[in-house]
Length: 133
Image (cartoon, rainbow, N blue to C red; front, side, top):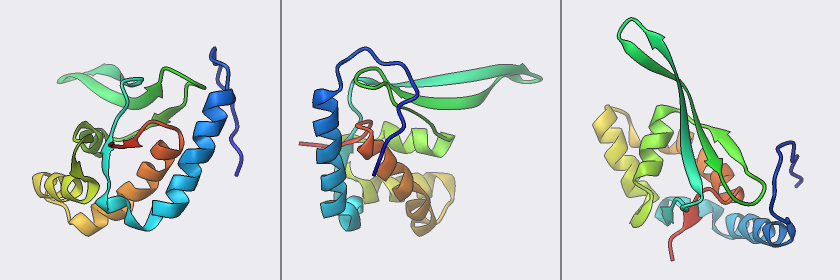
């Protein structure tokens, strides 16, 4: 597996490379049980929103998670993903967060989980979502 680092970054990447390899190995070992894991969003991750004026005020057109340390990864996410990540504070397993979000949005938990897991994997790989200690 390779990463394409097109963004600018300031920090040396030695520690980040080792951490990335650790996260990839963790995903390989735990990939089938991600729903059981309690996750947290590190303090180095920010949510950026871009909005444009509309008839009813400002309308968000882009939501982007941005990691402020290391290589500065960024991922565009939708509103459901931002709501799911808001619950990732280490208290509840991912499955419980998905069930709660699905109920609040009138969605099926299984469908939401199927859509969320690939996003969770990418965010873990880039250090933007971590297993809670």
